[in-house]
Amino acid sequence: MPTPFRALAELCDKLEGMRKRTSMVKLVSDFLKTLEPEEIEPAVSMILGRALPRGSQQSLDVSWATLSGIIKRVTGVSWQVFTEAFNRTGDVGAAAKVVFENSRVKKQMPLFGETLTVRGVRRSFEAIAEATGQGSRDKKERLIEALLSYASPLEAKYLVKIIIGEMRTGFHEGLMEQAISEAFNVPLEMVQRASMVLGDVGMVAAIAKNEGREGLLRAGFKIFRPVKLMLAQMAADVVEAIKEHGGKTAFEYKLDGARVQIHKEGENVKVFSRRLSDVTESIPEIVELIRRNVKAESAILEGEVIAVDEKGRPLPFQHLMRRFRRVHEVEHLASAIPVRLYLFDILYLNGQSLISLPYIERRRILAENAGEIPLTRQIITGNVEEAERFLAEAINAGHEGLMAKKVDSEYVPGIRGKRWLKIKPTLPTLDLVIVAAEYGYGRRRGWLSDYYLAARDAETGEFLTVGKTFKGLTDAEIVEMTKRLKELALKEEPRRVYVIPKIVVEVAYNEIQKSPKYRCGMALRFARITRIREDKTPEEADTIQRVREIYESQFSKKGVISFGLKTANSG
View (tube, rainbow, N blue to C red):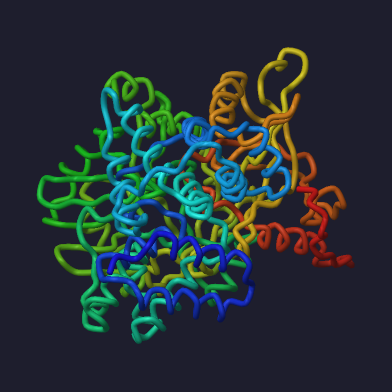
């Protein structure tokens, strides 16, 4: 029997009020057991706040401005009701629920039989994503309006949260893997391995339900299905990296570019961004470079694309992002902003996974199959002075710093660990999310130019403000940022706009201070935006736990006063 979407909404509502992880896992595990096989992946994705499978190259492409307009039409409620509810809760879904509870418009008969169902809602999301070209906006609006017209207030709350990608129940992928393990009686290690390789825990859940252990064991790479990337932690300096990696490590230039995953099968080549989006059409010269040089029948490669000037020197990151966002008139932009590819890893070659091989062996295989494509510059050493000279060379060449990779490390997709370390010569920058903005003064009057910056709480998914800045963006970037933030606006005051946390920016600062101003108890001193991280999602932003680590490390040789979260809602 089809599972009502109401059951999924009720589950998510219970999760929001829970903090004990074992209880959360048990609740979701029990729910997964009740689902039909074809409902597993959609349900898992939606519980995690995704309308479509993680590996899907489609998107709903629905702005908050569009969605809020539909909610107003469907309910006939004054938007002041939403604003007041949002002020109380700080949650867009909860505020939408209040609006639907106050609806003055008669609820329509359900679209999918007696109730909205998990599969029916997924089909609606698929139809919204498939609406492209002329008239697509009107079609998307009609589909969303129909969906919300049949929804109860609680269902509307979670439909809105899924559409805008703002679930915030505190139930993350790691807990979902545990729930899948419990629900279908398969070892957690198998679930985690399959999730790493397939890159989509929803797909893993479906395999566990339908095929059990045998299916999970068969899970492997598939060309043109992007794989989660292995991630790195920060290291203070080369000394820490060498010590962490047992006295010797592989140092490589950390390029100021965009990380890409390249899939090749025969003459077919696709390039995926750090966010696993298909960017093949934006960089055709990279596709041709791979075709000319990589002779293997099939391969999955990793590398870094950088923008360069006429002398081959690295250009700032924002120039490269202009290339990645462009899909029309690419030829003109290609001549204005040429790009260069450097490879640094290989995950798959001619039908064989290589991720279990030591890094140094993967690097050797990569060199044998890269043709004339350069690899990132590398030295393997345990000598601190040699490593520091190499770091200085990287900085002088216009790059960010160094990567340090443990020579015998396996490739672990989707995991951030100490096998790979990032080294920058200054305080580490933070990738933070803009949650509000204020209008500027003087020549910036009329533009949203003062930005509130937030880090993600890894435990709850909440974004906690850690600072504010008006520095770093050019006038042109401020104009574009104003346009984007207004489309994401949740609430507007005379000078301040609160927005859906979607835009990630890299932020430099002088230090992190203890502060009563923000609820997290910390504040960045002299924060300034160094670039807009178009390649990162809000879920990939730095966590408040990471901010606290940096705060405490500043005082490693001094005394430090501990603090906790305040209860006041001050940011």
